[in-house]
Amino acid sequence: MAYRLNSKKIEQDTLHWLDERGIKLEEIAELVMYLQKDYVPNLTMEECMISVERVLKKREVQNAVLTGIQLDILAEKNQLIPSLQEMIVHDEGLYGVDEILALSIVNVYGSIGLTNFGYIDKVKPGVLKKLNDKNDKDTHTFLDDIIGAIAAAASSRIAHDATD
Ligand code: MG
Image (cartoon, rainbow, N blue to C red; front, side, top):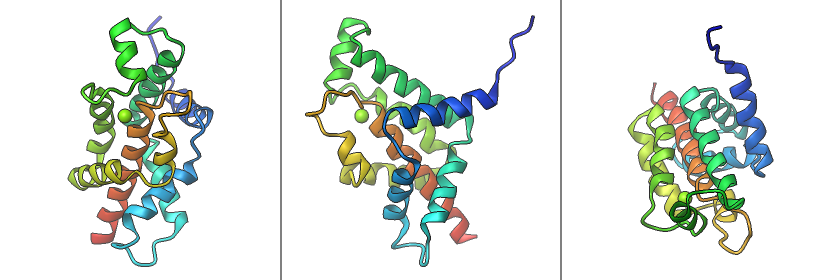
């Protein structure tokens, strides 16, 4: 029988695993507000939330979220190829594949997203600061970039709408 992809299941899994990894969509919406409040007057949290939800409906985004979370989990379980294991668990600066994967999210909404992604990765506001805490036992090497990228993409959507 031909293989049939269950799109609904992929979407549900994406939301489930973000929650499982301690991420609330409201926290991503707060990052969007942080990025856009100076540019879009009267922007509401509800609009930020809607934009985050829209971004999460894209398959490219779901694919990146699930792949990144899977690698973080395997690293926590010490199940990766040894050299990869070491780089991911220590969030090694020259590894860089975490950022590259996150760019597949940012790219969905064009070049404004890239600027936002670079900025938020540098400042690390809100939930990104929590994810970057190297003292906790969890591995978020991929998840921090993914969350920043979702926020950047959701911000780009709002910026595009505001200029229309
Ligand atoms: Mg990272």
